[in-house]
Amino acid sequence: FYGLSPLSLCLHYAAFCPYHIGHFSIVGLGFEEYVQASHFEGLITTIVGYVLLAVTLIICHGLAALVKFQRSRRLLGVCYIVVKVSLLVVVEIGVFPLICGWWLDICSLEMFDATLKDRELSFQSAPGTTMFLHWLVGMVYVFYFASFILLLREVLRPGVLWFLRNLNDPDFNPVQEMIHLPIYRHLRRFILSVIVFGSIVLLMLWLPIRIIKYLLPNFLPYNVMLYSDAPVSELSLELLLLQVVLPALLEQGHTRQWLKGLVRAWTVTAGYLLDLHSYLLGDQEENENNANQQPNNQHARNNNAIPVVGEGLHAAHQAILQQGGPVGFQPYRRPLKFPLRIFLLIVFMCITLLIASLICLTLPVFAGRWLMSFWTGTAKIHELYTAACGLYVCWLTIRAVTVLVAWMPQGRRVIFQKVKEWSLMIMKTLIVAILLAGVVPLLLGLLFELVIVAPLRVPLDQTPLFYPWQDWALGVLHAKIIAAITLMGPQWWLKTVIEQVYANGIRNIDLHFIIRKLAAPVISVLLLSLCVPYIIASGVVPLLGVTAEMQNLVQRRIYPFLLMVVVLMGILSFQVRQFKRLYEHIKNDKYLVGQRLVNYERKSGKQGTSTTPPQSSQE
Image 1: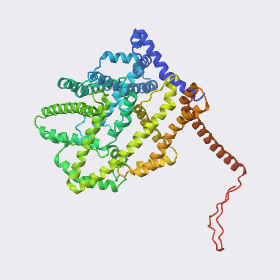
Image 2 (image 1 turned 90 degrees about the vertical axis):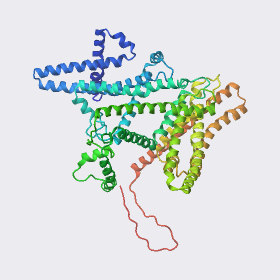
Image 3 (image 1 turned 45 degrees about the horizontal axis):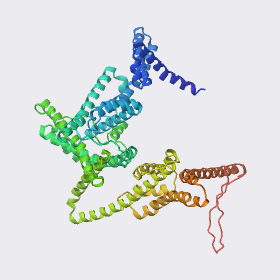
Image 4 (image 1 turned 135 degrees about the vertical axis):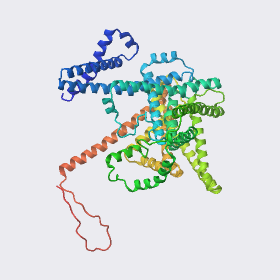
């Protein structure tokens, strides 16, 4: 009772009261039909109630200050701050990404040959899913935009991006900022953010699509429709994107370094062309001094893990958050006609972003379509496959070029030796990938299809159809989940082997160890799980003289039945071990009088003098 009472009061004041306040207000103003048409009546009604509650608290706070009721004024102020922070959090985390997601979708309609009518129909059929997907897309867009801004801060002179908040600043406190800044400043910042993010979407998505349609009329739209004869499904596409493509591209540290190098090269070029090098990167003399002092500073950081005297804990915290990046403001040299040069810099930046967007939208898809045409011919393939294939090819090409450039100064003999080592490593990696990323996920996905999917989806009077590509995609997801659970679980042979494989890495890959300790046992278990039930259902059961219906029933239900048997045996074995432990614990508590520690002495032929072992008793 004492635990439920505060919870009931919180629900009453946090949801019940604002909802009914908003409901009465909407009904009184006659907006009930519009709110019901939005398919989110409860959420909108609650938000309206919070807004009216905040306005009421502001008025009451002003009246309390007018009549000098200090306690009431302080209490109303705290309540208003809570409501204000809650609304601002909803706006910044919920509304703003949702607006960005919808704007991205609207600006990319021509890229997928869609219309606003199609989006309206999808929203009416599944409003919750549609809104969530648009919010997710907008959240990803905001996240990568903020990541790119952090990358720019590592390259540009401190103070260039003064109009953007520094998320790495230890003094930056968003909650405190929400409390102290007035509402009109938050509203102005919100409108400015919408304008900036919307303009970038227009520049890097809508305008490139129009240019591509004008220059390459047959290139767009992207093929994202799935047909009945397609070898894949939506589920396999999403799994490939989330489990294979994105981790392989985003987990590479080289990609961030390449992007940072491109940004720095563009900044140096723009600085020298427009005489803004001091404004963008700082003075050359200071950069040279910083470059000369960097080894000494690095040596000092390595030798002094604790901050030196005078810096304090705040300086240490700031250094950790900044990760070596510049902070504060650095003076610069202001050239003649500075506003005109800044305008030309912005124009040059817009042209560069436009060209980069055109390359990103065309080159990977064009390369992927060309490579996929050798495999599928003239059949239509989902653009996710072509884009993923093109991205991989572009990434591998850039990676190979950078490696060759790094090897060139070492001589021809070293290059041949490196090529030989890498060729052997690539061959080993391909063999391991075929076994662990091809055979194991395929067997695992097929077993999941037979145990779970087919018994639940296919009736007994119909024949189940199996798609190896889809089963492999499901198996990739299941293999990753099983590997993650294994690594988080207790110590046993599979966890030890996986940890050893991770520790060796690709460069020190041990093909014999992986095949003998990991691939062979796992594939053997999966093959036995697939073959033994099939042999029993198709070879043993017909010898018993049962009817055809019973044979069909056994063939379709033997896999889930054996799974239930294995799970039941595992539960019983676990319970037996637990009961044994409980029995030993009760027996020791009741009958154990003492424990004695005795040194182990190996028996020998000679009988010599023996020392008395140390003893310890516990009663």
